[in-house]
Amino acid sequence: MAPRDASAVTEVVRTGSLAARPVGYRQRWRHLDKSVFLWLFLIGVLLVLVINPLARLFWVSLQHVDTGALTLENYVTAYGRWRYLEALVNSLVLGLSVAVVCTLFGVPMAWAVSRTDMPGKGLVWAAILGTFIVPSYLGAVAWILLAGPNAGWLNRAYMWLTGAAAGPFNIYSMTGLVLIVAAYSFPYMFVFTRSALDMISSEMEDAASTLGAGILRTTLRVTLPLTLPAILAAIIVVFLEAIALFGAPALIALPGRFQVITTMLWQFFEFPPKVQVAAAYSMPLLAITVGLFWLQRRLTGRKGYVAMTGKGGERRPVRLGKWRWVMLGYCLFVTSLSFFLPMVVVLQAAFAKAWGRGFSLDNLTLHNVRFVLVDQPLTKAATLHTFVYGATAAAIALALALCIAYIVQRRLVPFGNALSFLAMAPFVIPGIVLAIGFYAAYTQPPLLLYGTAWILILAFATRFLPIAYANSDAAIRGINPELEDAVRILGGGRLMAIRRVVMPLLKRALAGAFILVFIPATRELSAAIFLYTTGTQVLSVLLFDKSDEGNFEILASIGLILVVITVALVMLGFRLVGRDFMLRRTSA
Image 1 (tube, rainbow, N blue to C red):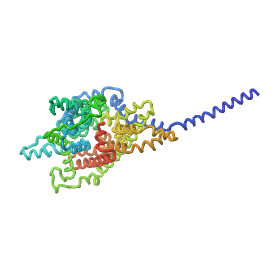
Image 2 (image 1 turned 90 degrees about the vertical axis):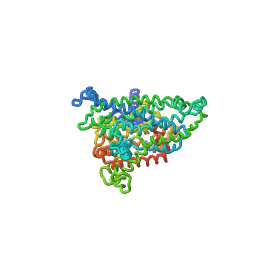
Image 3 (image 1 turned 120 degrees about the vertical axis):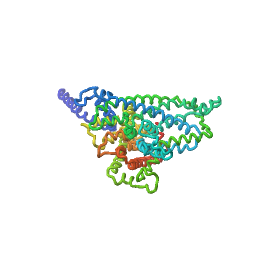
Image 4 (image 1 turned 135 degrees about the vertical axis):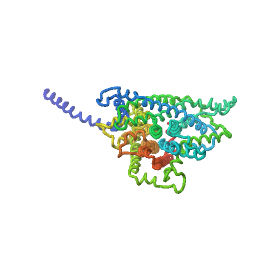
């Protein structure tokens, strides 16, 4: 019996162990949170969108054009000719000049709106918001109509008043380019500086006044030094914006017969494209951007630079007397350069039979707008592409950003900070560099996207992922995790908690975030100009292409459509999220 019992026990143990193993696996599978696979998928998507293009960009910059062998020849070619180096120098001059002009524009305006009794603050604030809405390349078109040699409105007015044979203004110059870029970049300086000024109590200014200091001396010696880190951070942002722009420099610099980095990169893609040289040429731009962005984060990360006096601190407006009208005049002068004058010219050209004939009833027509929206198949298709691509990119960016923010805030993976860094990384990548990275990564197998709408959509989604992530992260932080824990205690999974609890609470915030991504996606030119093909053209590219034809009526109509749609979306954002949601979140 003993051997038989022993063999029976052995058989039971053997068969039992074999039967128990799949049961154990099934139990573990049943209790496994299936959301893990979603998190892993999203991490993979993030790596494909952000890391792969940059890695391929760097790798291509080291490849020989013919053999593919590793070489530094591309860097020698990119920086071995003076005209290539001259474009780099021009970009640095442009960035520094724009930073100075933006400081002169934005800091006095921020002080006037935040600290004084200047009248018309609502009008100034609305004009600055309008400046945010108008794309800089549309502003460049408007200033071509205003200050083009001889034919521009300002030159014609000067010649009419003085009888001169030629006007004094030439927008096709470095000075003209600095003016245009500064006119559409100074709102960053305004928002950064005003945010700092709003935090300062009046007590230190009162002390200076008691000691006999006047308004100007108090402002220069007491108030503005307290905002210096914010001003320096804004200078860095403005500098990076200026050297990374493509639209305005292409419209102004190329006819003016000088180059900057972005226009030189674009010319590297003329047939036959020099992708390897372009990749090498873009590396210093990327390095400068990353370095200055790091410095900007260090400056804004300092929390103690504003003098705070606790909850009892009081802010009283500075009485300017008759000078308040001078300050209002200055603010209106600056906003006229950026918003009022350009929009008047765009409206006149969009509804004119011939913009050069001026303002008259017999010159009015709706043909241009109808041509863009209805009659011309190319413009009609580009309009459709613009908003479909923008909406799809915004949806992808928002979905990805929301999931990554949820992973990071709920600490579902051990390397959440790395994910947060990857989600924000595109913020420091100039659009033109990102586009070259996408071109290098997705114009060949295994993932061949060039020539399809998806390369534009994914590039837009990646480009503006940081906006979606910043808003999603703030929204997720505002939701108590205990609400989700209650769902899970009652037997629901994490995905059910997200669907039934988190998403309903995030509706308003996500609507605002969607609008904030959709607006720049519909206007993006830097990435689109490198990645579009004949069948995937968007309005920003069409506007740039039409500039060569000199048909400013159609150009103005295209720009007007973009502005009208943007204004409608901003008004919707006001209703959903609150006033000034664009400016608040832009400064975040």
